[in-house]
Image (cartoon, rainbow, N blue to C red; front, side, top):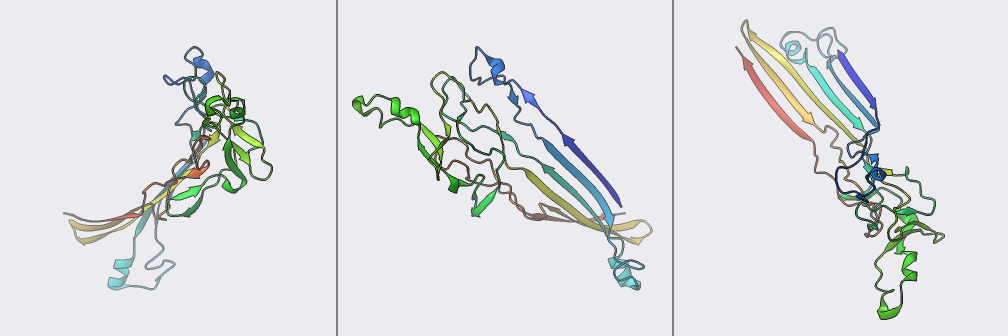
Length: 253
């Protein structure tokens, strides 16, 4: 039996090489890098199954049966990592990378994937907040019905009506900053099982079955975190990752 595991705790930062919020103040876009993952755990190992003569299962077997069931080897790979950093986006008030003003209590670490059936789900508790018209729309002139045409939105608490996120004022940065939310984490479990049979002195046969995504675990895509789009906090889709099996038969001579 062999086992190897690694754990990485990291913090990766960057100043983007394009798409700045303000090209005249690029250092203000110093942020978590898109490939940043706070935690990453990897493990792989191999083990002989406890089946066959003098083993836990079928320990009294012999003859052809013993030759068939003994010496099966299993190997596996496990990959776990925390989610990617994401923006709570708002309509850009400068040049690019517009993020929201945070003006009320909202737990940015409360994200939790909940699938609703099919490929959609939620990342934040969508029953506790709602999308409303941004308060600054009230300051738009009523002439020619311009106030009613204001398309800026905000996120408010359902119970109290308190604004939680709103669009920053023209020419200002969102107070929340960039990439303040961690998206859904990822985990995968792949495995294989195989055995070699010796036919004669110089000839052997190997049987092997490889399985990816053994637990058939779906991977959610990033949630919608744009306050000016419908369905804030909703995961609109998931990856098409499915369990796959592949068998191999190899003759060596």
